[in-house]
Amino acid sequence: MRLTTENIQESNSKYVALHQKSFAALSSQLEHEGISIEKILSKIRSFQIAVPSWALGAGGTRFGRFGIGGEPRSLEEKIEDIGLLAKLTKSTDAVSLHIPWDIPSDYAAIMQLAKSHNIGFDAVNSNTFQDYGQEKSYKFGSLSHNDPKVREQAVAHNKQVIEVGGKLGSKGLTVWLADGSNFPGQQSFRRALDNTFESLQKIYASMPEDWKLLLEYKPYEPNFYSTVIPDWGTSHLLCRQLGDRAKVLVDLGHHLPNTNIEQIVGILLGQNQLAGFHFNDSKFGDDDLTTGSIKPYQLFLIFLELVAGAEDSCQTWESISWMIDASHNTKDPLEDLMQTLEAIKIAYAKSLLVDRVKLNEHQINGDVVMAQEILQKAFLTDVRPLLKEARLQSGGALEPISIYRQHEIRKQLIQKRGENTRATGL
Image (cartoon, rainbow, N blue to C red; front, side, top):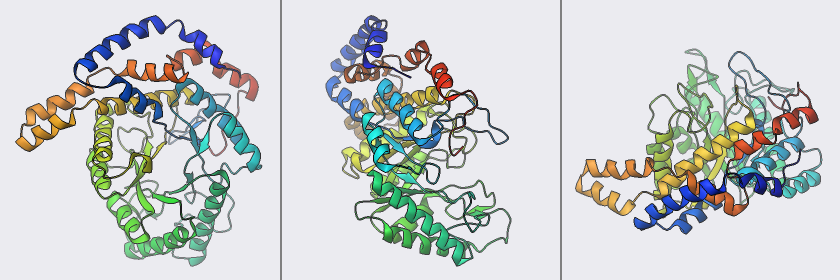
């Protein structure tokens, strides 16, 4: 599979004239409003989102999985796919590995391959939500298990993940627990939480001093009566008890319907407790749909809080981890990831257009109508010309999906890897 910078530039030539017209029109409008185009373009270019190693293959529904063909058969091929995304979109520069699915067999070779694609290694993710040949089963929990030997096994696994990440230059460990119960009386809520905290203490103590622990929460699934860490408050409580390097990871799908996620983000930012994000979207629950495909306004409001929090010095932008977590059950995964990266940056760019000085004035004066007008004006602005210009300036594709299809990349992947390949870990 070959897609060179020259290929991209040649393909761009078909779209440049139209882009220049739309970009000029938007630039004129924004400059008239006193908005610095160069400042926004610089922020868009520098904003990079990590791609998870488990997102390069076809995801599954609750009842089955339907392959796409040409899926990456190894970590090496996953990095190649992310390198392709980076070349086209200029919006990702890192992979978030899932262990034990993606343990390198040759660390030096993997690091060299990643470097050749300008890819680094973001937070590493542990797995105690399924059995994969370990001695003790996680059927009834892992870090919260009643059996101390099971807890010790789960802690040892997380320590192994830290070791793997350390060899690759990662600086963070993401922990998500499936631990919980399906029926009343199945477990003691307090004992389960106490066991979890005790286990997390051991994991936290084993992390290097420059690492952070990203602790997720989830109200249900795969356990439907209770989960040990059901909400951001419980995650926040545990992080506070663990130490300053433990922070709350917000997965957009890990909330009950109609939860005010932007308020959660704002509160965590105010406490310097936001670890980062797993980006996706949902209609009913943890659907892991394409980011921005269901609730684009919510995504915009979340970024509004993020930009405001950074500008108000609540928490630095650089301290937040940005990662995708989605399941592509009917789409080409690479196309879906391109759509996701675009949606995230669209929400970010729109949030940068909000006149926060005027918004603050309207809030203080209780002018609800004008406060809403400020938000609507930014949200309804078509910022895609800004994203295209940022990609163009960085050497990326003006129309990533169109160029991907024009060069028949999926067909090339199938020819190279086979029709019935299955991405590792899925």
